[in-house]
Image 1 (cartoon, rainbow, N blue to C red):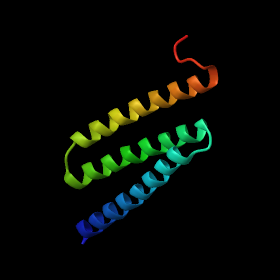
Image 2 (cartoon, rainbow, N blue to C red):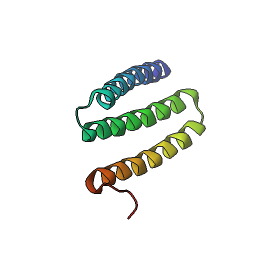
Image 3 (tube, rainbow, N blue to C red):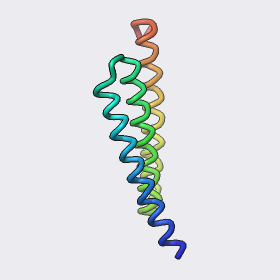
Length: 93
């Protein structure tokens, strides 16, 4: 009984995260300003990171958790670099 609940909750969570990724990709493509595109990219990598965590729970492998951690770190650094570029026009001072 509890394994069925876990299976269905993981499946529903992955479907909802896939919808969030579609919405974030739409914002990245159609965003009227660069700030909207960066926000869409930020939401996309967070949803992708969570999707990998859910997939790791479903499969039972810890490799996906490590990949999600790397995506989180690279996404944060990328968001900071893009925000700094939009504010100052350069990344490295």
